[in-house]
Image 1 (cartoon, rainbow, N blue to C red):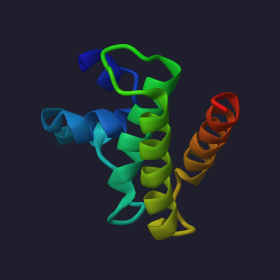
Image 2 (tube, rainbow, N blue to C red; image 1 turned 180 degrees about the vertical axis):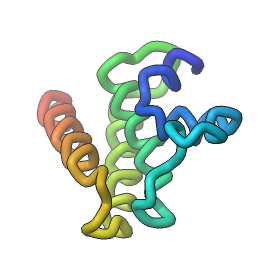
Image 3 (cartoon, one colour; image 1 turned 135 degrees about the vertical axis):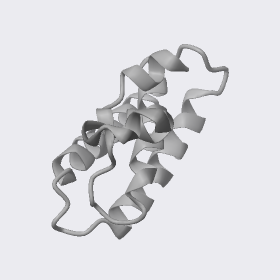
Length: 101
């Protein structure tokens, strides 16, 4: 939804709204060809935390986020400037996983 896109970092907003990607502030960073999976992971994490606009169960979004994060991390170069954001997302995922049991 538009509200979900607005809550994401600018580079994810540019991914989901290509017309924004013309502005360098909205472009995906150079973190490997598969880094674009990080944005769907963030969407899923946000849907776990704020379950609006979706009927999918929490476990679905947790598994989806975990899969996208793993795919991102497995192909992300050590030089990625957003590695800290990826680690923060991993921490959010672990917290949500612990609280859903």
